[in-house]
Image 1 (cartoon, rainbow, N blue to C red):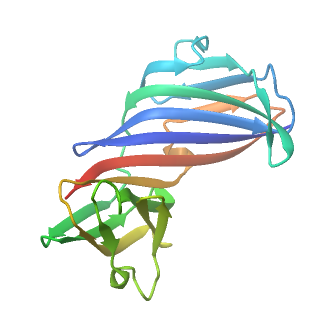
Image 2: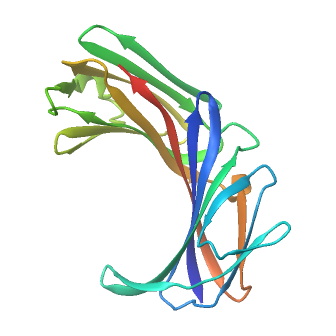
Length: 231
């Protein structure tokens, strides 16, 4: 039997500290893996505040659960899914980024935002600014075309209704160096900043194992919420 496992690590920037706040283990398979035993252990620096399902067994240095997957249809195919959520408090042993700079220059009716990131830990990541209002309650914002990187085309604009999000993808060396101009008609606006990427198994704060006769295909995802940009 094959099972796909997504390890999703949610990190929040609190002032300048990177805090691990949530870990989600999401199992899927085309075969029913009910009653499969799941064992996992956290690194010592991670403490658990809440756990779902709440009936998971806790031992001295590891947790134990029995899978109770539910059936659903995905892309016309029957699959079985099961999830575990841990609300936690902890940190990584080292910073996720070697460099993480957001520099803002305000020109009164526009702002220049310079992003400079470097990471050896997070791979194939993207920085997302937004949603930014462009026609909501009197707001007007516009992203100037000349700020989009004519040569590299790193910036991607996504519009949903009256909001816009801006995406920039990391280069092969794990870096982002971009700037963007945003024109606006009102101030006192917060722009959310979030990073989506992949993280290697050796840097995960959790280790998961199941029955040795079952093959696991793992994908380790990281969602990192940075402090909002205030303009």
